[in-house]
Length: 333
Image 1 (cartoon, rainbow, N blue to C red):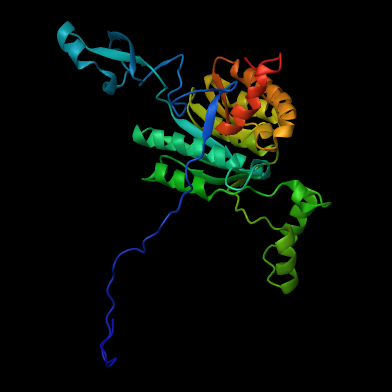
Image 2 (cartoon, rainbow, N blue to C red; image 1 turned 90 degrees about the vertical axis):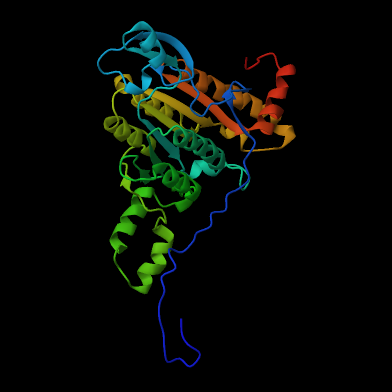
């Protein structure tokens, strides 16, 4: 601040600069199995293990290792011994959220891509964890590895930080975006010009550089590699939540297999490409046939007792495609 004559000046700290976050309107997200919507999919899934849910299974005596939060004080007072309440719900183990934002997730109209729907589900999971004060780790997976990581034990606001990171995600460039150049050749050129400030290097860098900053790069399939590191980090039996597409079934199966290694559990949210590629009503027959193939993949994954596989897609598109069940003998159900 200055006086009118300019003789005096002082500085006053008015606090941090405010920020404004503009978020899109919620999408008409369908989360379900075989075309049937599942309510409260964000964390209300059932477990074969007792957990901090809402439906009481039984009252039993306290044993060393039980959480004090599960003590049923009414039963303890009535029975003159310490009893705990076991409930049916999600487990109380650490959850790791993995969101795929490779170029394949860019399929769909602007604002309604597979990544947009995967993000909507992921935000719901994070908000549910925040409401219950549950720890959750987050990794975003790009074309060459992990692009963003948030650890619940390294920040005071992990849920808010994770949600902000989710809204910042954009699809990374696929190898096909480089034309005839192979990915290894492009990376080799990028490595050679790294640190070069010449005009030539700056121009060339625009063609071979990836604007995404990678936290960790994966030598093999980035989704499988990311899940493997997560499984090695979280405790035995932890839950790994994966939001991705059905583009590469073999790699997807390997990622799920890795997630459940050592007694772990996996929850997979899949965006069927066939429900995002075209909205032309004349192609509904083809979309329905591709959806049947997707549903078989989803069922194969879901058949494992420690895996829950769900579809994520526009509700109107699901309704339009599955309306053909009335005319086709091979129904999804």
